[in-house]
Image (cartoon, rainbow, N blue to C red):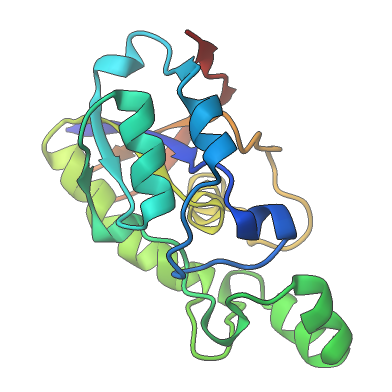
Length: 197
């Protein structure tokens, strides 16, 4: 059995606009983001797939607006936990502790904010979710988060999260993956644009 999963990052929030790390902090979409999303749609035939969302409001609202209905949430889709870094600016963290940040970021998949979660931990929680989708032979659109989608890309491509990503992702587009019963995943197509209504 196999599944297909399309992921989309949630729309913009005030913290996105300010460049802050959001993680699990439950920040809503900007009003202008909601208005812009209402003018967009998911291209056919993907619009008929089952919708899922991260439990965080910025993802849920993005999914509800684009799908036109209430959307089921799944805990595996929640953003990476940035722990003590949440609400902070990456540039300020690097300035405050350049050596410590460099060492942490040089760990790639094992980079972990104090009290937070590493990309490898995100991958570990995604694997059973992906296997479950495959066991049911499902086609799903999931609205999630940037760090989670980067972890999914790392799973699909073997990218160790060091250096540039093997594929440059457009954060306003859809990214299509396939998974199997083991939870292994591969990238089918990146950067599928949303369409104007």
